[in-house]
Image (cartoon, rainbow, N blue to C red; front, side, top):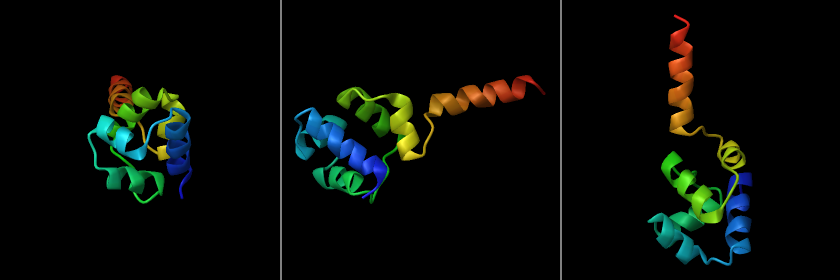
Length: 85
C-alpha cells in the first residue's frame, strides 16, 4: 500500500464514508477507488482535487503524497518561467 493510498483510506474512514460512497462522489468505480487505496493507481489531478474537496484534505499534502502538481500550479510556474526570457 502506498502512502497516498493509506492517506486516502484513512481520511475516507475518518469522514465515515464507504469506498462505494466516495467512488460515487468522485464519479469513479468502487474498484478504481480500491485500486487508489491499495496503491495500484494514482488518480488524475482532477480526481485528486475532488478528493481534497470531498474529504476536506490539505491540498499541498495530498498532491505531495501523490507526487503530482496541480495543473494550475504548473501553468503558473510556466508563465513565471517565461516572463524572464
